[in-house]
Image 1 (cartoon, rainbow, N blue to C red):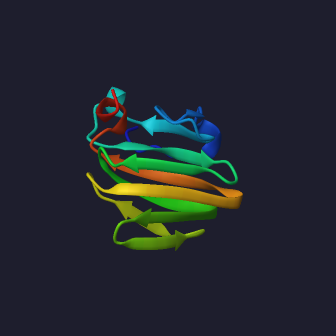
Image 2: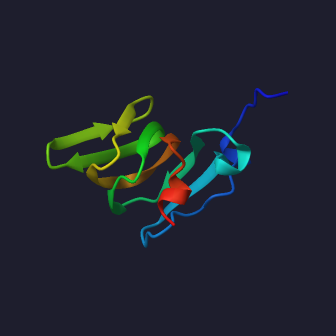
Length: 116
């Protein structure tokens, strides 16, 4: 069967590559599966700040908690059910408040090769 269902329990969360913040990611579909995108979950601990220039197009869906995403053009606050798109090349700062956040993400192309 090619159609697959995932839950957070399926994700082996590991510290986000190149980050010192308590931000953890777990890919469920990536370059090893032969498709063009990466799909996974992310967990952001409370009070974290992550600064990055996007190496890929990234879409995050907030499942729990809240994130503040800032760029030179402005700031958005995203909560449960909200989707944020961060285009390739955009410099972003992602912050969590006291509750942290759980997200699902899709990137194009794969983010791990872009960070190696």
